[in-house]
Length: 214
Image 1 (tube, one colour):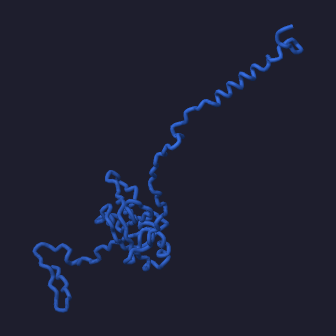
Image 2 (image 1 turned 180 degrees about the horizontal axis):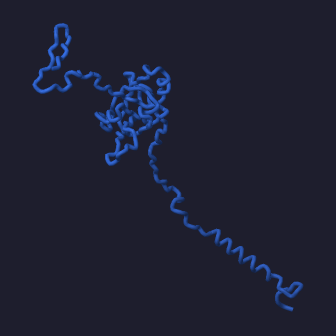
Image 3 (image 1 turned 120 degrees about the vertical axis):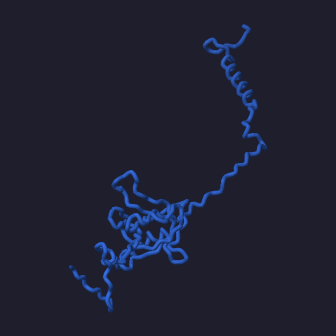
């Protein structure tokens, strides 16, 4: 009998080998294909140059406590205000230098001032850190002659609150006391005189004769 030899079950002996041969041929063809490489992976391609900005210096620069002439900086004042305040009242004075960052006034439309007029001093207008409140007695005196953004050297009394007690800063604030006119007026020069009478003449030795009522 001619034809292919059959195995048990009636199936040709080489029927199972065909799928294996076809699969091997397909795999061999796929392996021979050369896929295009991505643009960035081509041999010899130059990577684009990346220029980064310099790393910023994040170190916090410590402000000196005093200026060369001995005046406190704002940072120095706030560090040592407690020590100065612990002294006797007559030894609580300090000199400080800084820039006027803000002038705080009472609102013109308000009958009662919700705040205390004061200055806000800083060591730097561009990078302010510590802030010092400067008040005065009388309160409005601190508003005269201290324009914003100007550098000022002020001497005053170290305190923890304003004279009226409404502005409190436990780190310390500066109180500028403006002396008033202590010259007492002469009562005799201010007293009204009846019309037609001349002021009393002083006797020798500075005594004034008593008036002679009629």
